[in-house]
Length: 72
Image (cartoon, rainbow, N blue to C red; front, side, top):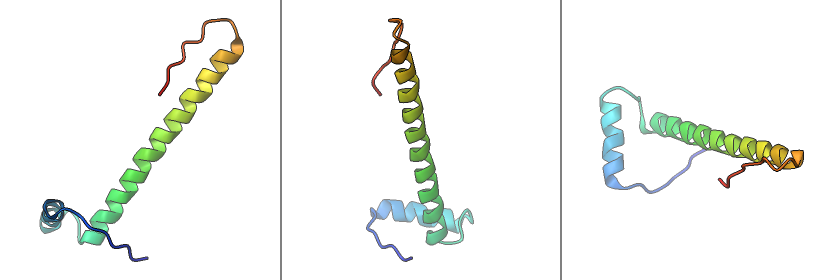
């Protein structure tokens, strides 16, 4: 699938520098990697948030008054 988007010229130049250094073979390769990292990062954040909420719910359900849940 082809995706088109606009980016600030300074980011494009930095991206091209990475390609010139041989870190990536093309803009497409670099952007695929960047998207994969972004999705992985947000997936971890989402998982951590769900896990904290689940742990907090368990503390509250104990009902012994010791729950120390914080909003995230």
